[in-house]
Length: 613
Image (tube, rainbow, N blue to C red):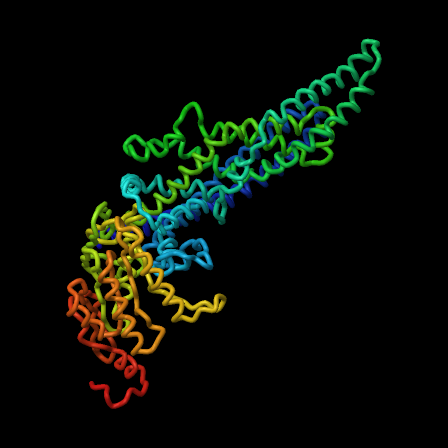
């Protein structure tokens, strides 16, 4: 763990330096505010004295010169204030990295809420989504869509080897590029504030299909009438000709009321709501435009849309921003009325915005997509960078049924207490029965395998010294809950879950089902649980799937004697100095001990005379 410790010390030093610099800059900003006030008062005094002593002719140039120091201080203060904000956010980024290392959930950004009724074969069972989940631990994204993309990768049920290989190559290039990854986060945070950026408003705006041609003809007619109004109202009378504006102006206003407001209102309103989203996109896209990717060929290919000289994102977005600002001028009812009475202001900007939107329709969606992709990839790269001693890329085997890992650990278990294990499971129908006492680590071991498979299929690094896996369909029955809403008892909910697992076994022979089951049929009595469990495990051993079952029922270990596909492993416990001790290490064979009565006895509960020692 030497590299991880070194990385942690480096982050702590960076955080301290950033905090100190931030404090210095804050003090500097406070001083500048006082200097600004002093400069303003002095400039105002000089301006007043000049006006009363030497008159208006001398007052204007003297005032202009007197206020130069004040203006300079205002510009300086803005720069220092921006630096203060950047330093605060950069310090926050470093602190969040440290929180990921320490599993300090209270410091980590809040996760995306998990869907209330998520029908998924392993998401909830493996703690992949929601609070204190793998998704929350990994998620360094700022955009909601980037976070959702990372979540979708972790929940992948049909992994594609080509996509996995592509993501692995991109993540490998991003791992050492700490500055790039942190600055991408910083750029988005600078303009999006404390909340998440959402590109949905931009996507909805692009989805509108009103063509520019719908505005062209009304614009030409009304523009001609506007010119005629000016000529007929001002030039004709000056030349001694009759004032025809008494005819053209009512015609212009009538047609404008008929065409202009009816056609432009919705478009202009929608465009005006995009200001914040456009500002965020402009800052992030500008950063990606300016960055160089020469030594990262996969990253260069991904970011190629930002490097196209003929279609720079910043150029298009600045254009939309200018048009949006022009359209926003009519937000003032009086100014809007005056402008539109003389010229078809709304119609002109609606036409220009529609043209720009048509040109942007495919490009902006592509730019947003690349940004979301980068954010998700950066999350996986940050995880690898923070765990250099334990994170590695798995080898994906496209055919067969094989899973093996050496020194595999659970990323949601704190490093000081994390115990890594070796495991190999292959051949269709293989079932590992994992026995062991309460709190010995059976459920955590099942989740360790599932979480690392989810990471592998997402294209990210796994927490293991080495891992090789085929492409499986993952299914878990670890955290089953009853449903009062649907009228399901715990036992019936468990039966439904296990039935879904059994039904999924023969669906795709090319990609076998990898199952993880904890405490089979725990919701019924001992006799029926044992009968049902034996039958269910025998059915699993005759299938094309493979996996592990954790159980307290030691009677189930005898199934290995009748079927060569069933194997026994266990976790051990001991009592030392009056307390339970666990090594959390996987051992071959059935568990030789139980500890339920020991735990009850240590807690002071009556256990009867059967308890020895």
